[in-house]
Structures are given as C-alpha cells and as structure tokens.
Image (cartoon, rainbow, N blue to C red; front, side, top):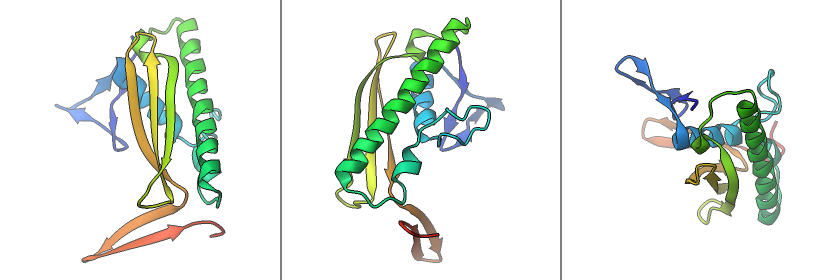
Amino acid sequence: MSFDLSIVNGDFVIQNGDLNTIEDTTKLTQDILKMCLTTAGTNPIHPWYGSFLSRTIIGNAMQSSIIVQIAKSQLTTALNNLKDLQTLQTQSFQRVSADEQIAAVSNISVLQSQVDPTEYSIVISVLTKGLQPITTSFSVATIWKIHVTIGTRLLILVRGVNDG
C-alpha cells in the first residue's frame, strides 16, 4: 500500500504537528483530482503529467457541445495516463493497493451551468481494482475569473477570449 500527503484546498493537512497521509480510495480520489487539475507540461520533470483541459477550453469561444467533447477527451487521456503510471508503479514493485488503482472509468460527465454558461461541472466516476466505486467532482470555467472584495463591494475581474 502506498500513501500520499493529504491536501485540502491546495494546502497540506497538519494534525498534532504531523503531516496527514492518505491511502486507498482517498488517495486515488486525490490522484484523480491532481491529474485532471494539473496543466500538462507544467512539471518539467514529468511533462506528460496532468491534462490539457485548461489549455484547450479557457479563453476559447466554442459551442457548449464542442467544449463538452473536448473536456471528456482531455480527461479520458489524463485518466489513462494515471492508469499507466499506476501500472508502472506496480511493475517496479511499489506497494500500491487495489483501492489505489483504477480498474475502469465508469463515467465522465461534463455539464454546463444553467446559472453561468462559462462554468462547467465535471463529475468523474471510476471503479478501483478493489471493486470500490469512487466519484469525485470539480468545476472549470471557460474564462478566468478573479473575485476581489473591497469593503462591501465584490469586484469580478474577467479575462476571456482575445484578452492579452
């Protein structure tokens, strides 16, 4: 069985002065999120790690149906890369539990928000090799939004298509 450091909202989790670790289905869920949310090419040592999701949909003015198909394709590629990495780990005799490995991707759902058409909700469901179902989700937007609160005013700065 392997382990990873627990990350919540981008920060390591520290409890009683120790870094928390995770394993099994919790680790696999975190591995899926890290693979899908890391932009491929940003790790110079492992440029294949991550997905091209943000590079292909952010700042592109495309029809929703095209964005959905691109997102599903990019996420499928990222999850296949994760499965390949898990195979390499087991072949190199690293202890990886069955619940830390993807047996099959059950579903990838990409739905456009009814409230904000620039946002998409993504739900990924997989089955582990230990036969445990896992579902995780996150959201992405086709434009960059930065929410800034000044006093009682909320400003939303937007960078979209053709912005430098």
